[in-house]
Image (cartoon, rainbow, N blue to C red; front, side):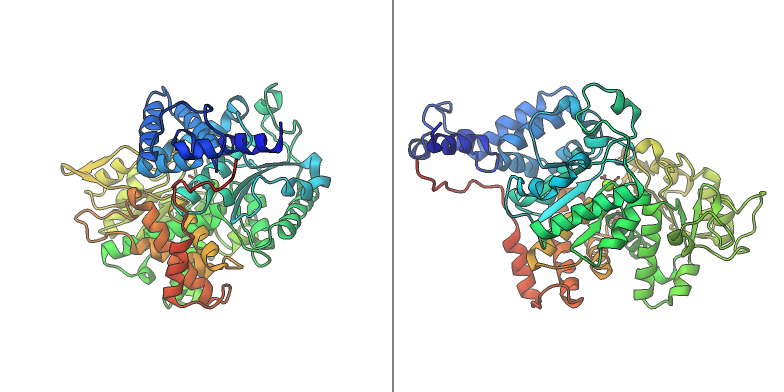
Length: 552
Ligand SMILES: O=C([O-])CC(=O)C(=O)O
Ligand SMILES: [Mg+2]
């Protein structure tokens, strides 16, 4: 083919450039596309209707996911317009929970390349791989190593579904130009026996590397990103806890980076708790919080609450006294020898709560003694918030905030309907996973779904708009406050998070607040509030066809 042929076919093959049936007569003639498309010329709206009908014909959620992914790989403008017009319906298909199925079946449903596969055996070629990226300029990278995908564990390179899905939301909700996003999977092997035995598995068929080898590879990767894509936001997603925390600590002061599962989840839980305080007319500094679960997410939420309480005037010690963490063995106490340093910071004195059993005090003991106003679960312990525990809590607190945040639905610490029934409809509830509509006293009660999707699109928009160089704690706290402020707590039956239909507006509110915090923290150039709002507005990419100027 001549270079000219490559160019013109490129327009139909490149999902960023392709307008497919919306190429008009003049364009078809000028760009050499006449006869390559059916005769009819459609508007974007007509294309959306056609695509929506095809989507509606799919028999299962996974088939709907595959259908949308194919559209994304063919015509990104159309994909994002369709997503914008049907955001509530399609979010669970593009992203959680259906994306879990897509990760599980990644090798079977693999169609076209997207993003970068960075395999350990290719470690001598990291720079070359990064230079092979499909688009030169990148605002946001989402990277996973596939080890702890959602609640479904090690998926090897199937984890690539997550960076692709999250970046789709960076664009759909946060307005990041899709041509400036880059999903990456670090293929460091897999310990998933089913994948290792599956002849169709497309990743490196090898047990996971770990320890020094693993961390050296991460360092090599980060160094290559710094050299090739300086200033790009690097978001870590779905790493196993023993890797996630050290990676975040090592790199957070060195480049523009954050961990969504630790910091994003913490910020959205903080937002829901803040909205809960407003709804119950109490102060954050008066709350007594019990957390079930001491993994990276649970620890991250507690540290976020400590920061918010100290920002509201408590001493750090007073804040820590208000937060009790319980794990599978019981209350985290200073005399326990099985705690890592992050968990140790959240431990209470050995005699803080009397135990009614042989071991450390359990959740029921802690709830009875502490009389919490907020109960949060990140434990994957199905049903751990029992009727007795919830009734004990409600006996001392008229409007308890109860957040069973474990994913997926089958791992939730309690079902919203039960929580309402056990608290005379008074519980203020946020869950991690979707649940059927809850009712009390003949009314539908909104149940917030506490997902980091309320946070990360706005973070990406903020740091891109004002060219921030770090993601600081104050920026995450600002994100949480902005989300809480977007909640209508004066509604007759208050929800703890904004409506999902308004996620794009929430992302804008988050972006403005986060960008202001970045300027205040000195990690972005000085801009006035008005300049920040202008930058956020101007950065937002829109799903519209731009005129092609290329000559045939
Ligand atoms: O993706 C989601 O829905 C929330 C999340 O980050 C996770 O569970 O790892
Ligand atoms: Mg995640």
